[in-house]
Image (cartoon, rainbow, N blue to C red):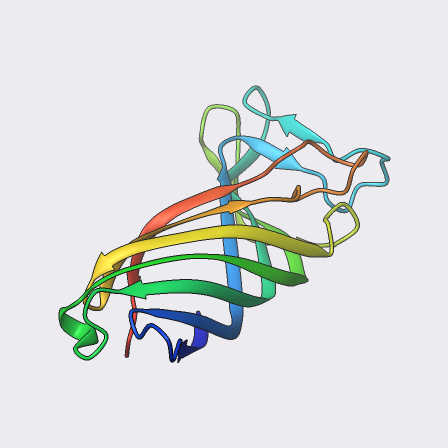
Length: 174
């Protein structure tokens, strides 16, 4: 969720700059995989647990304080709820939290062994900053968006070279 201010250009009211701040969260779900973010290793391990006990549900979650900046176009700036809109931008952010969460311990055959939740928190393997390119296109308050992370999720030499992208729907102008 982001709160942004629209600053129209005086020379061209169809163009504006959007600036703001917000919190971005990401959830990545794994199937029969363990992610050792608290393990005493020099490289982040992704361990396949399909042949042994594992969590039924397992995810990696991150929370990032971000500052987005966009160059915006509106076909009819005087009636924004009835206008075609497009935006290109960037987001810079600082990592607030990184944790894994596993629910329902199961055998390799899928039988529930223990109904509990395990949460592990550690930012050791993660980059403390995030830089992402963004794009949006839509009509009125509805649009589709895309983001691509320019830098890697994990620190160089400590984990895989992962650069996530996201595609989704936006409701704006509330």
